[in-house]
Image 1 (cartoon, rainbow, N blue to C red):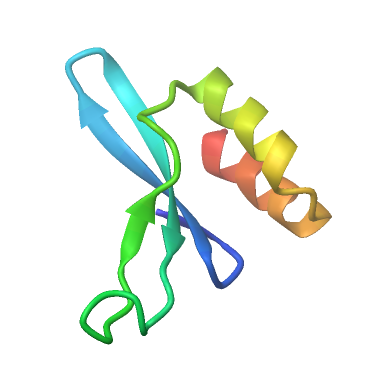
Image 2 (image 1 turned 135 degrees about the vertical axis):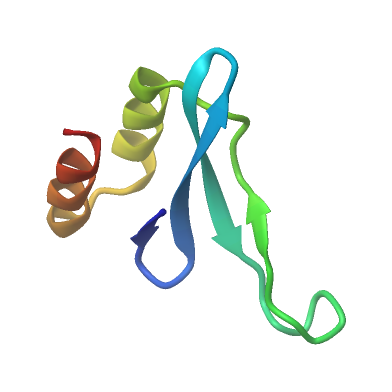
Length: 72
């Protein structure tokens, strides 16, 4: 799991086709029985797809370095 700030995280999942990643968003505490939970923002993505998605949605330099290290 790779946290991208306070409200986003990238979770690695194993599948028959290899590893995939899902981007998840933290929901506010008042939306579901007063508990925060993580909801998927994307379908399971391959490595190249997740890099494109992150490039479009996460522009922080710090996150970009962290992401590169995560995939290397």
